[in-house]
Length: 150
Image (cartoon, helix red, strand yellow):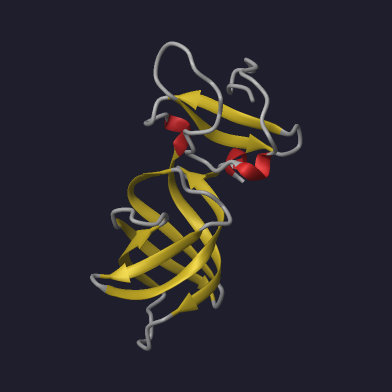
């Protein structure tokens, strides 16, 4: 485990056992704010960690999603507004959705969202109606792909 500036903080038990935004189970203590998983460097087998629940590295502004499954019977326009959930019991987040093709969405958040992780689900809602879901493929911040969250 290391910080973004290269300071070694400890050893991890395998990158697959950690998720972006995770706080517990890191075995890092000490002074200051709690430590969180900020990302993964798969090539180097490094878990990237940092302090502060609101660490800037945890926030993104959009995503692409694949393996689309609409549950609604209505015809969806190419662009539309909805709300989204990325985690169980999470508060709905206002988003704009653009359908890139039959099986790919681009979802832009109205406000930066925390701990969006490839491989997890994004589920879209129109008030209480579930419109459908997809698997998060890529995560972006201000148009730049975040390579450390995958």
